[in-house]
Image 1 (cartoon, rainbow, N blue to C red):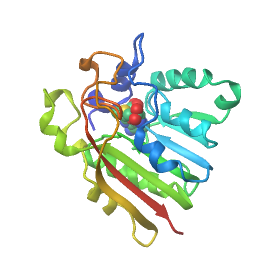
Image 2 (cartoon, rainbow, N blue to C red):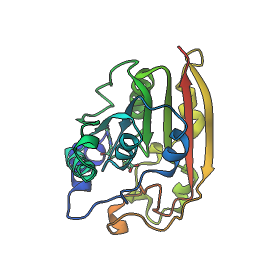
Image 3 (cartoon, rainbow, N blue to C red):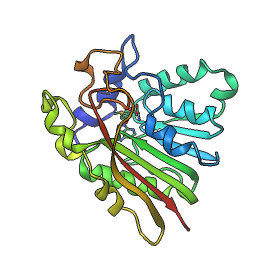
Length: 228
Ligand SMILES: C[S@@+](CC[C@H](N)C(=O)[O-])C[C@H]1O[C@@H](n2cnc3c(N)ncnc32)[C@H](O)[C@@H]1O
């Protein structure tokens, strides 16, 4: 994996600056998919500026928010502090590269990875570790940008490499059918407005976008429940 494009320095630089990158609102698919689940321990992977982790904590979850970027996590912790000390105490901020450091096994009632676009091999390694970290009865939720939108990028060289995009079937195939009950593996159109959400210029977007913008109109959504 190229550290220049995907390592901590790249992401620290991405998040460094005066303004936040993302909208501060939780991802629409998170709200839709998690609203009906009983709260427990959650792991949010690639937590960025923490909007999803904060939403989970506000909805009763005890959250571990992991990101490769310390700068992102500092921003995220500041965002959480806006909601008070009690909420902040419900979130652990963990700086780690999940392609090389696997989370605790069978520990989380919910594991989420939103717009976690890495090249194929590190992505597969990371996702195996994430699947193993789901507790019996727990839920894995992986959401990405629709790869069919790759051709719509103004400058594909600015975005993640083409093999960083994934179809639902690829994620589903990584899950052991004896262990996971696949509940959703689909591409879903968004109902939220798609005007740019980045608080910064489009040039900072690097094609990653966000649920509320970046010109994206559909998401890959994979949800599975661990049986055993
Ligand atoms: C496109 S952003 C999405 C952020 C957030 N999930 C959201 O929806 O707004 C991808 C995030 O994954 C993080 N990331 C990238 N590679 C990672 C890795 N190997 N381990 C942990 N986090 C990583 C980046 O720092 C970034 O915050």
